[in-house]
Every structure is written in C-alpha cells, then in structure tokens.
Image 1 (tube, rainbow, N blue to C red):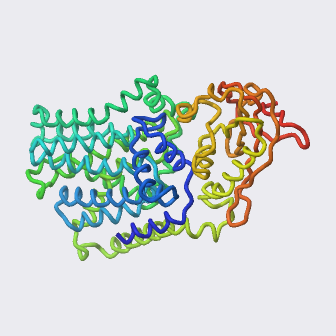
Image 2: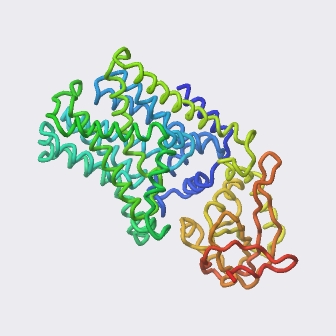
Image 3: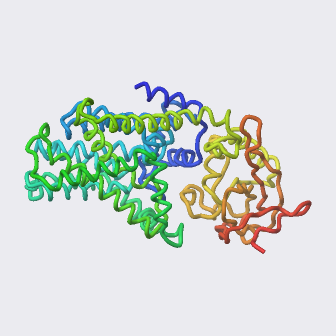
Length: 505
C-alpha cells in the first residue's frame, strides 16, 4: 500500500507520455480493436479519466492500480504454489524491484493489464487443476480472455498451461476432460470481438502483430535484446531470475509430481518452469529474426520471480554461509538502491539533469505548446482547417493538451488515426503540419498540398528551458491523399524562404 501511494504521488507530478496520450485517444474512440493492440488498455483509461478527469494522474493511475492488483495476485499464486508465506511475501518484494514491472506500474500501456490478467489466469488454472470444479476452469477462461484482450502475447498462456498438464502425470487426465476446453471456449468468446473487428478491417491488427515488427529492421539483433535484459530486469536480478527458472526446470521436470497444493513439490517447480521458459525462450528466438523489444519477455519472468523467492525462502537464514550471506545482502542492496533511484528519477530528473539527459524529456512542454499551436491554426487558416503530423507520438500529445477540440489526424494514413478522421473528408482544407525533429523519416508534403507556407516555430519548455522546437508548416488545400514517406532525412526550412526542401536532395 505504501509503494502504491508513492506511485500515485509520482503519477500526480509526471506529465503524460506520448504513447499514453495515444491510449487516451483510444479511450475517446472505444472499439473492439485497434491497429497496434487489443482494446483493454483503452477501457481502463476510459474508466480512469471518467472517474478522475482528463489529467495525467488519471491516465497514470490506471497503471498504478493494475500493478497493485498484480502484486496481490502474485502473492496468492506464490503462496499456493510454494506453500510458504515467506516465498509469497518475497515474490511481491522482488516483483516491485524489477525495472520493467516498475515502469508498467507508472506508465499506462497494454502491459499493465496483461501482467494483471496473466497472473490471475495462472492462479485460476492452478486452482482448477487441483480443485476440479467446472466454475474454477471457467474462471481461468475468463481471465485468459481478458489477458487476450490486453495483448496478443497472452496467446502463450494456453500453450504453457497445456504443456504443464501434459508433463504432469497427476494432472494429465485433464487433457481428456471437457472442463479445460470449456475454459478455452469462454476465452475465445471474450476475444471474439477482436477477431470480428479485425475481419472488418482487413485483419490489420493481426497482420501488424505478425509482420509489422519485421518491418522495423532488416534483421534481428540478439545482442541488443540480451544486453537490454540487464536494464529492464536489473543487472543483478536478470541472471538470478534466469537461474531460478533453470532450477525450476531441473526440479520440476526430473521428479514425480506432488499431490496437493500445499505439498506442491516438483509440481510447483514444473508449473513455474513451463509458464516461464516458453515466453523467455520464444522472445529470445524472435530477437534473432526481428528487432524484439526488451519488455516482450517480461510475462515469462513473473514465474521466475516466484521461483527465485521460493529458492531464497527455503533455507533458514542461519543456514547461509558467511560468504553467501554477504553476497545475497550485497545483491539485495544494489537491487533495492536501483529501485529507489528508479522511483525517485521522475521527481529528481527535472531538477538535477539537463533537459538532454532527462529520460522523461519528451513528456514535458505540451500543456503550453498544444494550445499555442491551436491558436496559430485558428489565426492563420484560410477557412476550414485541421492540425496534422506524420507521427502519432506528436498528434496524440497535441490532442490531449487541447482536449481534442481541434480537428486533427496523422497525414500518412498508417496508424489508428485513419479510422477517426478519414483523409478524403479533409480534401480542400488547410492543414497545419507539426514537424518534430525526433522523427527519423520525412514525408513528401509537396505531393499532397497545393502549396506550402512556413509557419512559426513553437518551443517545448521544461522549467523555462527549451527542450526542442516544433516547426509548423501550412499545407494549403490538402489533396485528401496520404502523404508518402521518404528515406531518413532531417529537414530544415530554407532561411528566409518558403519551405521547399521537403524531399531528400
């Protein structure tokens, strides 16, 4: 509870991020699916904003409260699997020391509901396999369906649970009984609206998930993925978590099964191994082919957290050697210090770091810049107008800062905005284009605008210091067609002249 209160305090002071603003936009256009992800995060943001108002606190609060729920679920799961209260308590402590789970507790994204429903699915499946009641299996199906509505990564859950049942002599009988399949039917029924939405939109979300990632790179980068695991999971905890999963596999796959939840024995270790390793190894394999994101492996480490806590709790303190006790204490101290620094960073960074080194730099400045850009649009437009950009990370913060009162869309037609404001309905209007120089790709505005005029520049400020400048360009009489993307290029307007250099030389 204390940590949750601290996180709510941070949430009240931290500006909204660009992806969070995008999910707020989703909450304004509730649907059964979106280009990037399933819809759960949009509904959580909608509930938070309608409860607390359109504030950064409301958007962040969704992640904070979901993280609290994840901790409670992990505590219950660890206690039932290990039969040890100490292991359950240490599982919660370890979870909240790991950077990727700390980030998911502050920044609202699909991972926050995924972690919550992932843990509840595992807990319900464990109870169902031991209890045997149909309602327990149906509960696991409900949680699985909600996990699938959070992120497609949840498709790994039935694979892991089915593998556990197949490898467990005592639980294998469930594979020929109808209850698990009834649970699967419930999950599919909850997920059916996402399938329906995709079917109506040319399977766009499924295609983006399956193929879109490979478009971000010419190949995999396993070294990048491996190195970032030390950052996202912690330099001390990452090897410890992998080691704990290795211990779980050795103990769980090499011995006979336990017979009761309290005497989980090798059964508990087997459960932790098969609900952890498939995701961890799967994402590592994906990094050989595509630019795998570092947080993709995180759900697999939820089982590793319990395994590590169980290993640490199984020996009394006096049984540790002096060297082992010192090593464990040093590792715990380093990990705790890093966790404290992580939580303090949003408060301290703006005071101690220059803007260029502030990890939350891109969060600042929109509350003033957005209304300023809207004022330029209203003042200089020649008739009907809209505000646009080539990047949703620009458009969404602008919309959040203005409350969505200004007509807006991205001009490339390749993200969720295409469904909210069709470009052909904007034909003939003036578009005020926001150029953010963080974007690595340029677009060919000359192909979709009758003429171009250089507008003013608007600074993004943090504590009176200019973080970066947004260039404004008037697209006169927009054609209504998507603007084509070009090769990486950093555009600068000609000094004293019109903005003509919008394509690479």
